[in-house]
Image (cartoon, rainbow, N blue to C red):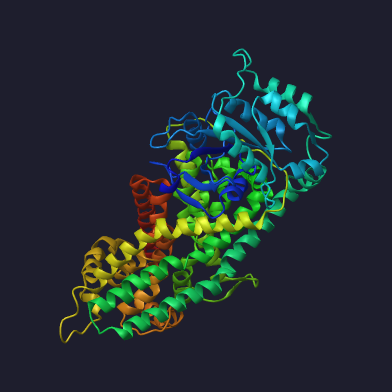
Length: 619
């Protein structure tokens, strides 16, 4: 952003759902840069705007806020930036307040608060097209006079819908001035809003008829929940099913690249590092991208349409009983596909306490990476027979594993609620915006930003740790005339033998312990790792599972198999998840706590499972 260092700084500010982000995209286009504010995980978005006169502006898109009396980290950052007190950030030259023309009763109050800061300010009266369709008539000159600042009509989702705003901003530069002073005694913003609405706005109804009609069904305590269940089911299916072909293509592409590089280079450490370490590591990161984009496409569409706040409202009471928030539902549901996009989507949770609780319990949701391990062990140890002539016994066990993860997440969040120092209740405060059709441009920009954030923030950590795992698995090499697989002689193999002492009470042998190490990269790797340990050659995980089944069914006890199943309910055997927790919380401490409690829960639950099964004759 060095090119705009001396440009006029414009702070784009407004309530959530005011169309602020759409206006930011309209003003800056692709000339945007996304980062984080210093010391926090809140996104910082800055872009460049070039006016017709050639003058350049630096536009900073501030987090959405309802008030300058902050109730969340987002609002605190917005307040400090508007006042010019945020460390490392220059004070804005102009405040550009975006207000929704269809919801002036709420949005004008925040505009009045901003006016009291005494900074040069302009109001973008957004969504005027939607207001016209509802029959809302706004006297813009009267509104300007009442507010004491310039007011410009905009339609952020329409091409050139902000042209007049750019012209007005350009004209303001030579003579920036603070708003008209208001007597200090006038501090009742609600009364001021009522006066402004009475003098400048004619509104047939407070809400749109279509909104009322939809809300009668979508907010109904029965039909609303059923509708939400259908929507969430479709999202879950889409994230799982739609992403699979692309993920398979990425996996095949990285595999082909690895084979090509491996064939082009002579055998040796460099060949192995590039193919098994770097290419495999990068592929392990990129393979999550389709799920990320599909999930966020739905979340952005639901948010832009106005439905997401209603879903949070419907579920808030149930989630609050477990120490979570209604906003926690979608991140936890998406974690069934993968905890990485689930944790990233917690950014929609405004309350920092609820967001942290959701992040910490998201790994307990049964992600798709656990399925290869579950399928292997259930197929080897659980007989395939019908229960009551209807239910498949293996299917019931799989369902029980999923249910155990859900119940454990609720129990953990409830426990954290009881132990935390802050015992105050944080009620869910939501604005239910008007329904609207999401704009494709805003969806595309949002998906691009989130995809790049995922690759940049998480990719580096995963790649570094994957290379570290490669070193552990590759060195030292097997001696001449070795009789066991090379992995047995590696650092990882030695660690596995050492770990076996600690994991013996759980029924884990040294082969299982070795498989746990590369399984850190991704849980499903444990199947291929077990195949390697048992000196099997398999083209893929499915083949490995088929070959492993008779070996482990003969060599392991039922107690060991059940113990390992329970272990995978809890154990954070996924570097991607831990790296995402670190990035989203900006705290090694929180990542360490998540790692510790998940491993502790896995060890204790597996220990109980193994010892009880042995006592019952399953050892």
